[in-house]
Length: 236
Image 1 (cartoon, rainbow, N blue to C red):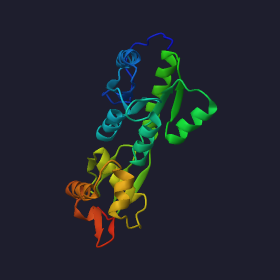
Image 2 (cartoon, helix red, strand yellow; image 1 turned 90 degrees about the horizontal axis):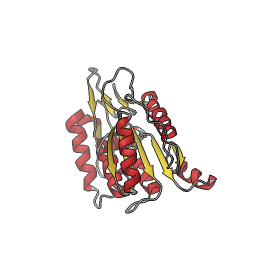
Image 3 (cartoon, rainbow, N blue to C red; image 1 turned 30 degrees about the horizontal axis):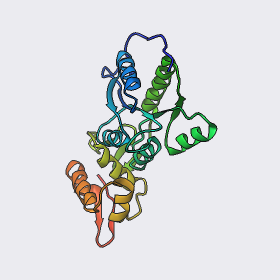
Image 4 (cartoon, rainbow, N blue to C red; image 1 turned 120 degrees about the vertical axis):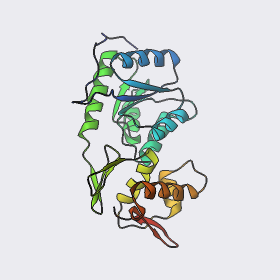
């Protein structure tokens, strides 16, 4: 990787004061340490995973503004990691790093869910600029799904109740509610929801657990039970 001129200052988020949260998934420890220092210097709060399985766990359990993912990773390939995150409605912008720069490789990365693609070796200034652009895109996400008289704000992973109160959801809570809200008239079987939202889980009982979590946060009517068939979206 070629170095660039290090920019001073922090990343701005409009009027927000908290730093952008970045997940770096990179198994090359020397490169990972360099990028960690660079991104910290740019004002990001950075978490690091050195294999794809750890990256998947962090991507599902914590909220980030942008992800930087290496294409070739141990335990779980970068493309598989991206596909699994997207299948759970994790819409966080992803920059894919790779030494594989053919058109076919770039198409594979974008099809797997990457928002941008940077081929090694690269300039640090270009990486920084691309990350700033992806973070700005986070602010532009305006998708809103109705849930009765309330709203699911996709970009923020928050539910706005009819009273105006906003409730943040954990990643898997959001993924389950998004799966139901994206097809509001459909009845979803527990097996279908396990496959689409909780792929690593061996039993469909995990669906019932997260339905309970959603009802506890948002009210019992937010998810309706269709006896003998599964679940469907309710109302707030």
